[in-house]
Image (cartoon, rainbow, N blue to C red; front, side, top):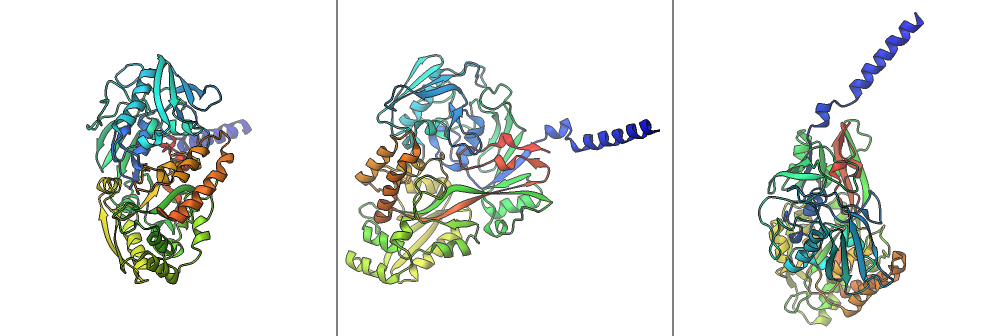
Length: 514
């Protein structure tokens, strides 16, 4: 009798356990992911934004990649990489010899060389060429060895290799001096792009021939793009999505409860920053540094974070965010409170006509961009010292406008390319920066180069503290806030906590059915 009872219990437990495990049909079912991050281009040479790079990290491979929460890159398409000698000017990688493109052709060092060279040759206005400012030339020494020859010592180069800018393309499918314009992708990442509809969706199928850092590929994914946060939230609430990220409305984020039994909520720190960039060129109403300093005396970050973002972001007082080596509070040190009196004094010294009239652009349907622009306009105009003309632009047009210096001021987020303060250096405040403010300071440029000479990144902290002091003095930008990262998913999807961790990698392959 005891044996019979035991067998019955085991049978029940077995049935229960079987019911808890997903069926093979469920395992192959597509996971739908929603976001408001737009894709600028499917060509790695033509995009330098979070939405594009999120897709790139799934359909392309890089020589190196980042583990979740890691700060040092690990081999992916490469078997090994390292600096040659002690000068930090020659970087060599040995490739895996078992990687094939969807065409069936084997990847070689020539493809790697071609991929890096075309980024620099094309030098797209909103592309990532600036990330390789220290890259002099690339040589394919043999089928599996590629060597990067740097113009100056750059300990951060391995970090840059691991970004979306280092995506390796099939040299037979991508033109050498122009961007590819169709909706095809030929990479060797864990996914292939089965279909793509701009601003609507990207359908990703696991790439059966993938070879690299990952032990395997993930579930089929449908990445859906929404024009604004409200649409994203509506789709998630209507159960059209399994996962929603970047970015739900602040009113929704502020009410999220990690203990909610009906969904999974992941909140984490992020190194994403959001700045107000200022056009410093001659002819701009913000050219005089005293005008820009006056603006810095008027911006109220705490109010912005508390009202527009309902406490879901943290006020930021410097170029480098908290959690990154070298972070300071340079703008709080120089502009500790809002002061109309100090702002007026600076504008009087500058001899400008009051109110100072300037244009302020933002990306339409990009989170709370419209509400943020309205709040900043209100803060600046309340002093009687400024008159602000606010205008929203579609995302791609917005990028082109700031790249061409067609706006006086614009607010935009910056997602760290890699977990190092260098990603907030030359790209944002170096001469010829990606943000195209026209700002150029030889001392800042020298400090950026100097900081790149330290393999021990903690030793670069003093250089970055000095950079932040200079930026607070020159005000080519005004730091506004630092984002918290939120991902919500249905209770039957796991792995969403690994999706985005600030390393620039969007790990769709970590999503699984539970």
